[in-house]
Image (cartoon, rainbow, N blue to C red):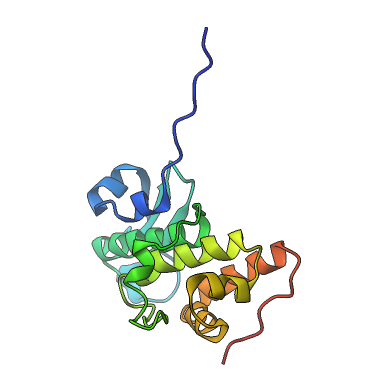
Length: 179
């Protein structure tokens, strides 16, 4: 009997680019009553949503809204962010996800609210991991300055935290707060 070959591991880009309907099919969806402030209605409806993405094992929740549909949409957005933060792919430069995040001079010129931010953040974290946490080496490979790369990482607190975690994992000092 031949040993079964493992299926190829999906890339982060494949998951991030899936339509919402396809991502939802890959998830176990739990709804529950959220606790905390929000008035009487909040505690009477099961509006909070938890998604468990079966293939990756990632879990995200949203319970801010009294609308289950709004919370589900927030969960999908957070799932795409979680792919960027926690799913490492190999580094392929130049990368299409980076192209939409940099200006003509090769500097990161994008805010965390832009749709291209999280795909680019995933590529930057891939490169930071490949460069063993060295921000200056990563910036050099990206064709930008260390200061510009640090400013990009500081655009989102979760991105900054993951960059710090990567550095510590490779034996470097954590990044200092960016101002």
